[in-house]
Length: 245
Figure 1 (cartoon, one colour):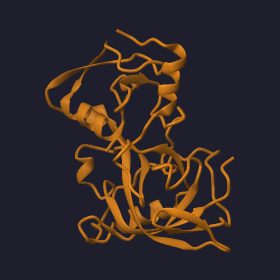
Figure 2 (cartoon, rainbow, N blue to C red; figure 1 turned 90 degrees about the vertical axis):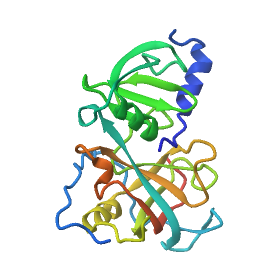
Figure 3 (cartoon, rainbow, N blue to C red; figure 1 turned 90 degrees about the horizontal axis):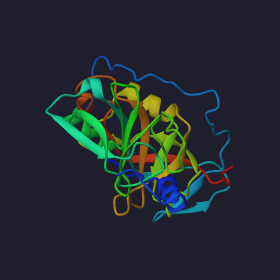
Figure 4 (cartoon, rainbow, N blue to C red; figure 1 turned 30 degrees about the horizontal axis):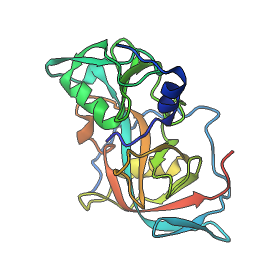
């Protein structure tokens, strides 16, 4: 589901100029919660009402309904298999559409990186991908501005709907895309998080009330069949319209 547009990479190329040739199951395994001490929080947010995707200021915090929220994650090579596939791209963040040999990886891992935008290799490096840059190796999964993605903080949206830096919380989870209720543990964790828009969707893959929310690394084989891999529909948000710092 790679819907992020790493603008930093495009800018870097312009500067450097060169690149290398329902119900929940009885038990839901929780994701780790490596929130850094510096993670942003939302305290008494000045919320916004949302009409046709346009935010307007409200006098007090209120929930805006009708949102679709899709999780995205970092694929982990050791949980994947399939035929070995050679990947070419850039060895650093400062190029685009490179042709350097980046290594051989299981085909399902490569497919997951293209879908989600990032994957941790067996060597500990990150194989990242974007539609306008291609593959590159990095020391971290990245957001639009080149900052490391933060689990249960980083989110993506169309900039015309929620501007970069906008902070929000998921007030209610709505339901999963199959109409079932999301697992209680999953909904509670998503609601507890203080999210911030740092990514942009790939053009044409966003929408007026659509968000992607980053939840960190997949936790085992078959992660996409787990309760953590879901799209919420009919979710409600509480949005902080204060200017980002």
